[in-house]
Image 1 (cartoon, protein in one colour):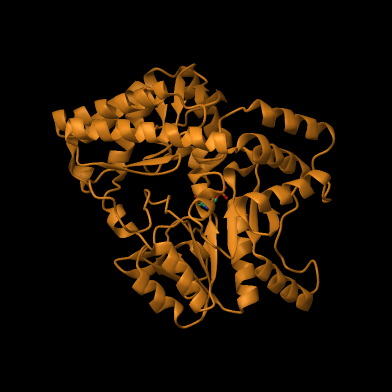
Image 2 (cartoon, protein in one colour):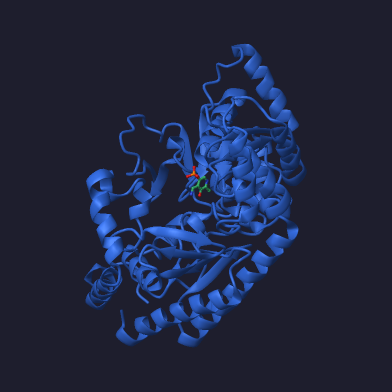
Amino acid sequence: FPAGGSTLNTPLMDFILSETARFLDARPKTKALAERSGHVWRGGAPMHWMTDWATPIPIYAARAEGAKLWDVDGFEYDDFCLGDTPSMFGHARPEIARAIAKQAQNGMGFMLPTETAVEVGELLTERFGLTKWQMATTASDANRAAIRWARAITRRPKILIFDGCYHGMVDDAFVVLNDGTPVMKKGLIGQVADFTDTTTVIPFNDLDALEDALKYCDIACVLCEPVMTNCGMIAPIDGFHEALRTLTRKYGTLLAIDETHTLSSGYGGYTRSHGLEPDMFVVGKAIAGGVPAAVWGVTEEIAARMDQAQAAIGSGSSGIGTTLSGNALAMSAMKVMLTEVMTEATFADMTKGAENLVTQLRAVIAEQGLNWSVVHVGARVELVFGNLAPKNASQMRKLIDPLWLKALHLFLINEGVLIAPFHNMMLVSPFTSPDACTRLGAAISAFGERVTRYGL
Ligand code: PMP
């Protein structure tokens, strides 16, 4: 299975063309909507990621329930993308629908706290262990807030991130390593500041590079996911998190853990499952079941330092926050998520389902003799086009070939399966049936057969 250099691979191009035609030919309504959309939405959709799927035009969602989604042409999909996490606990959950409908009848945005807000704060502390919380509307906003506060209280200019990370629309985190040299990501359109001055980027799992960077004591915080999930999936090596915590403490750098994706690890995220001790903790996307919301929490010590910094500048002048953050609608959804949806039993079901999927995928790989592997963290499963799980982004990038991804994803869509675009991530919700996992395994097997039969 050749990774990279696929542009000259004619059988692969032919395969993509025939799968594209297969998609379009069966979907007259989709084509008509795409045509209308092109007149009013720049780039053809309300949000550019909606056009970043393997299909030539977006799939127009008609409705979704549990782990199934239906498009406007009536095609049914097993949904392993789940909105790329917000719907990880299942689409259209009646508990959430009821709670937000009730709140909508009582008002949604007051710029005032509610009794539910107090309960939600208590629930967050109980679950994730950090003691003081703030709300944001997206995980991007929460990460930006955490970075700003980290700089404010440490009075240090820099942050440190790991190559290949993604933390949302966080300009400071758009720095990558290009052959070992930090450069700004091309996607940072219109940004004139050069973040390579203030963002240090090092390979994941490289503890020597970490200490080399931290020892100058000018880094306010390390912002990281506990398992990298946005450049394929990259697991930490044994002892990585212990060393990360020891080194950040040694050099007075704060540790901000972004659990927006790894919440799928278990009841209190990866942090709780693995006893991590972050100073700052961020989670968004699924936390309000798809209602836009994110939260970030800090320890008592960090909260006290924030209070001190705030006292010096006066209230209301932090320049952090948006009007809709902490609104009553999001709070009502979060309360239901924390009390009725994200239970121990739910996580146990999801993890069991994911383990079943991993077993099936590994069986396909073994049967077909494919040079692939599978990585997973809780309910999040990643198929890697290489047989050794990469330890950092530069190793992973060699295995992520856009055309191979396009071919697989397009084929899966035509077979009735959605997985997250950009890489091979599959999320298992509490509603994902063993049959759905079998269907996904069979579709990947059929793709694998074509890879070997046609030498794609
Ligand atoms: N953190 C991580 C780890 C993410 O993967 C993402 C988005 N994929 C974000 C933060 C940002 O989330 P949002 O786009 O909802 O702001």
